[in-house]
Image (cartoon, rainbow, N blue to C red; front, top):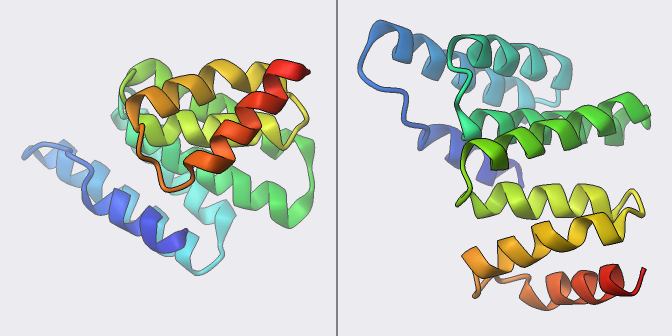
Length: 147
């Protein structure tokens, strides 16, 4: 999971401007903090980058992942709420960003908000029909429709 996160950071397109370079540097710093388990510092770097580039769906997805790991570390609901909010922002900014849909659906599913996860699961599967976790996502989808 952490290797995927680092790969996503490396593919962020920030442009050639000095502002773009700053954003990219902040995301890279955030990824380094994330890799080392310093989720507070990762969150701060991602938020700093997003203050500069407010329309960066990948950045919001990264922020959501940092909040997820912070929630797992602390169990504090505020971090789960921020995780979900970040993933929702990512899918709002990029309607084709299937990873963010999948992350959002997982966040909702594990909060026992399975019915709420249904449209995000459907969209993730529509955008990525050959997802390696397709069987699991279909199971979640079925559970959500029954809730």
